[in-house]
Length: 278
Image 1: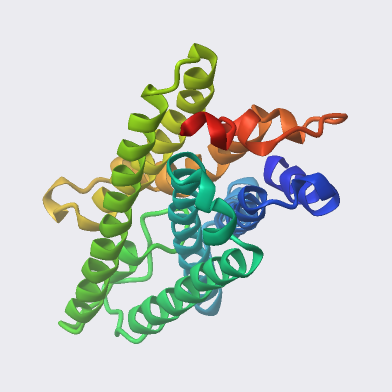
Image 2: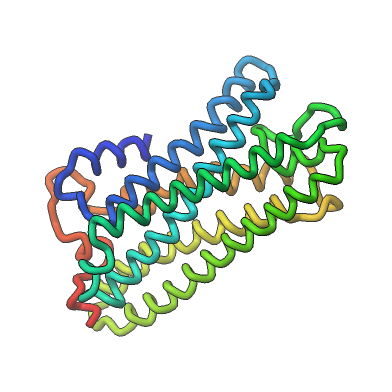
C-alpha cells in the first residue's frame, strides 16, 4: 500500500517531478514487484494449507525476485549518488543529474538487473535435481535449489553468485564512501536543524542498505554447517521483505513534500538548500 501510494503521488504530482522523486518512483516499483513476487504465494499456501508450486512457477518467481531485488539495490546506489551530488556538489546538480542522465541511470539499473536475473535463472534451472523436490523456504531461492542439485555443475552457479556479490559489495563501498563525504559536509553546517534533517534521513537509509546486504550475503554465502530452517527463514525475511516495507517509511512518509497541500523545495525538506552546503 505504501509503495502504491508513492507511485500514485509522484506520477500525479507535478511538483514531484524531480530527480530524487523520479528515482523514488522506480524504487517503489521494484519494492512492489519484489513483495508481490513472494508474499502472495506464501500467503496462499498458508491459508489453503498447501506448500506446492509448479516448476515453471518456481522459475518465474526466482527470475522476478532477483530482477526486482537487483534493481532495488542498483537504485539505492543511484539515489545515494543523487544525495552526494545535491550536498557535496550542489552547483553541478543540474548538469550531473539532468533528465537525460536520470533516465539513463534508471534504464541501466533495470537492464543490468534483468540480465542478472536471466543469467541466474537460466543457470540454476539448467541443473539436474535429484535430492527430492522440497525447498526449505517460503519462496524459490537459489541456495535452496542448489541443495537439490546432484551435479558438480552447480559450481558454475556458485561462481556467478560470488561475482554478483562482489559487484554488490563494490556498490556498498561506493555508498559508504559517498556517505562519508556527505557526513563531512553536513557537519560543517552551522544550523543544528539542518544537520538533524540530513542525519535523520541518511542514517535510516544506510541502516536499511546495511541490513539488506549483510543478511543477503549471509543467506547466500553461509557454510552449510550452520544452516537451519529457522535461520534460513529469518534471513530470507530480513533481506526480501523488510527493506521493501521500510523504504516507504524512510523516504516518503517522513517527507513533507508528499503530504497534501505542500509544495516546497526538495533540498529544503529532505536535505538542505544547495547554497547551505557551500
